[in-house]
Length: 400
Image (cartoon, rainbow, N blue to C red; front, side):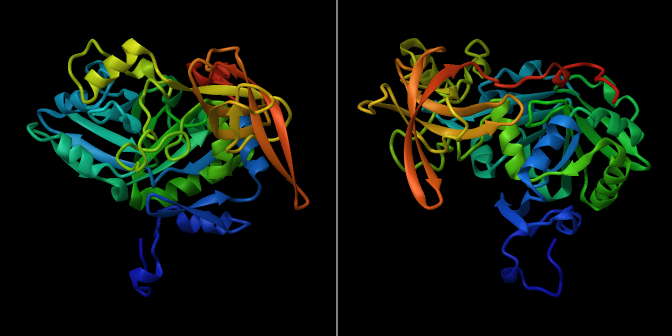
């Protein structure tokens, strides 16, 4: 993506195939790095972009998502040995969310596995994992290749997203069920569409050749004019994913391959991902450690919090009592939810204080015109997701 006129050291971050289109629509020039790429944090305002997710159609550049092609006679055996989930149930045309761990049962990363065909998969994850994947593949007849730069991607999310894709001519996209994928053509451009996303709403992800990226973007923007289409950045997406109760690496957990301090690693059971751990499928990396943890019970648990007031509890410490005498955890992600009108957070809470319905106290610091104020706000532990509209699973979706 570098121009021939500029040396690479003057462009330390790569540009996605959608960069020029994004740059033209950016009104505040707010960009952030993601997996070696420069990406938009905010196009206009967080509020406008957030409500596009919940009320219309949002378009988010997913290209920096790290993508691996995993294929060969032992591709399934390899993935099933690597992952905690039983991927033998994943048929061609299906997608599964999964996690993988080290031998101590600590999370290395999470991601989505796309079954493209028999013995051919695509793994999408937030950070590069090639070293871990290659080391784990020893003894398996499998080929692993990073294809991030070969595949451009857009997340098209919101209540009018299906209607927009149908207006583009993607006939049959309405028949895709959650975590299914299909092959389509936009004019003559091949596109893979999966009914997946990070918003907890109705939505799809479009996967295409990088050479076709700008033509697909232009078609989406043109067809979406009457359906409130809007490109969004990472900040608006972050609010939506918190409402959906989804985890974000380096905020809600740190990969065990990167941690330096003892005790900062997290297991899937601690992160509330026990439903992804299948002890009955046979051996997988970390199984013994996770089985021991399940038998003794987790020492801490990532939970949802409903906090009094409307000030987001960013990085707040949590206490068992209002006086703040006993610390019992900390907030990992927080946001005021415009849709639910609730002050939400994800937090890691120590046993035995993480029971649903229990109360803890959040220590929140507010900066009011350069004057700091401290508040102790009551926080109730609640179930996730915080927001789950029925349209996210409706098949076919309503035609707006």
